[in-house]
Amino acid sequence: MITLTNLEKIYRTKEIETVALENVNLTVDKGEFLSIMGPSGCGKSTLLNIIGLLDAPTSGTVEIAGTYTANMNDKQLAMFRNQKLGFVFQSFHLINSLNVLDNVELPLLYRKVSAKERRVAAEAVLEKVGLSHRMRHFPTQLSGGQCQRVAIARAIVGNPDIILADEPTGNLDSKMGAEVMDLLHKLNKEDGRTIVMVTHNEEQAKQTSRTVRFFDGRQVM
Ligand SMILES: Nc1ncnc2c1ncn2[C@@H]1O[C@H](COP(=O)(O)OP(=O)(O)O)[C@@H](O)[C@H]1O
Ligand SMILES: [Mg+2]
Image 1 (tube, rainbow, N blue to C red):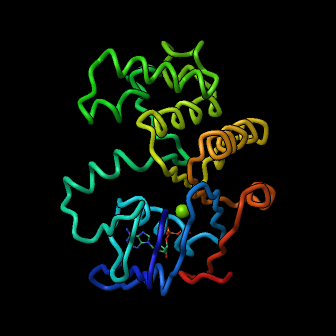
Image 2 (tube, rainbow, N blue to C red):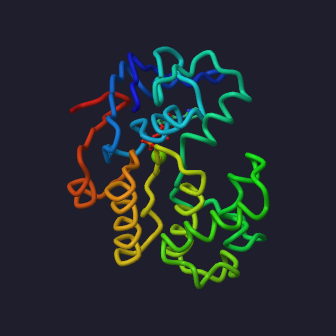
């Protein structure tokens, strides 16, 4: 489902050069739930951003769902991202001026899906994440755990094969974090979605299919 070959990422500013990833080779199979672990600054977010086609590697290849992404233009990348990938971030990234339904519908708006179809799809995923009773609420009226479940609903509303989650429970207490993890496991087991998650939590990582560790931009196991 995901194949990264000889991946390297170097950030260059005028004075500093940072090697964020070095010789990364990684394959993620369809239906896998992969954890990525490692100390702060070791390149985890860089890796997730490259898998998510939000950033390009300095060298090496990225293959997602059978497609090499190197030669796509920005418009093609944006469309591919919208159709194949769902993103979940530590800080939710919801739009506070939009209610829950409107937040969840956003990826479909981009695809020019009709208003009626957007509504039906958003209601269905909000039921899936257990928030049917909060559809008219605004993000500021919800708990952190609920916000993250809204963000997950938004990530899956377009039915992507792959979910990328960067420390999805990092801003949540353990109870809310456990709810979010239960939900991610459900999306993996019941719906067969492939998940790549960055986490600092060993217990969480143990529950997933596999853990890959990084140190200083390099895979250590
Ligand atoms: N946009 C950027 N410009 C320059 N350096 C960056 C940028 N993003 C990340 N880095 C550097 O790359 C390294 C890896 O960062 P990151 O992928 O965010 O690590 P992690 O998510 O594991 O904490 C760090 O040294 C960080 O300072
Ligand atoms: Mg990070």
